Amino acid sequence: MIKLPDEFFHAFASLSTAMIKVAREKTGLSPIELFVLWHIRHVGAVDANDDTVIIRARLRKMLEAVFDFQPPHISSLLEKLQEEKLIAHRWLDSSELQTIFGDGRQRHDVIVLLRSGKAKIDELKATLRLVAIGMVEKQNPGIRTFIRGALPLLTRIAKSLVAELEPGRFTMLYGERKDEDD
Image (cartoon, rainbow, N blue to C red; front, side, top):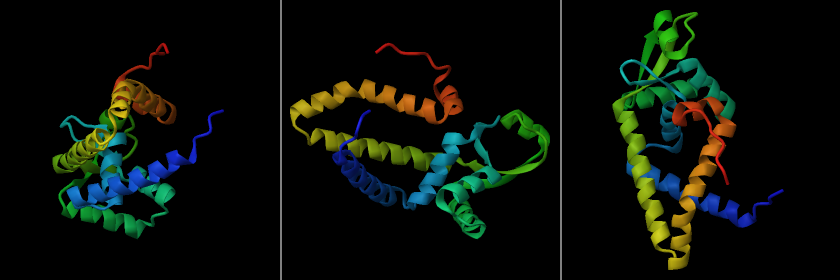
């Protein structure tokens, strides 16, 4: 059994705080607003127009379960993102639901991640990559070399975590899982 040292948790807390600060400064959005956009992009389905959509009820259930949000707070959060023109609200009929989600039993309202919402996420990822590069470049040469060499392994670990936590999403992102040799 691996016991992570406390330093990992200290680093996580420090990095999380720094990332949230950078994210807010760069995008002008709160952490929860960014999380909602990222969640839609991560778990949403892509329709024929290349829009990423999520059934509103599924998003609501996640926000209630994970963050203890109540429906009025969820509505306010989504309204703000709509006012910022980052998401849109739309109704899908049963044939559209069948095509996108494989479930067309009834009509549903969905939240659509607009191009500007995707752009905010891309902007955030680009900024965080630059911050990470800056942090790595501040390290001594030995640590920089180690980090660069460790990136393929860290990528495998990240994919493994996605496969374990969200097997269906792993397949959507990377295709069928193949056991990799160590």
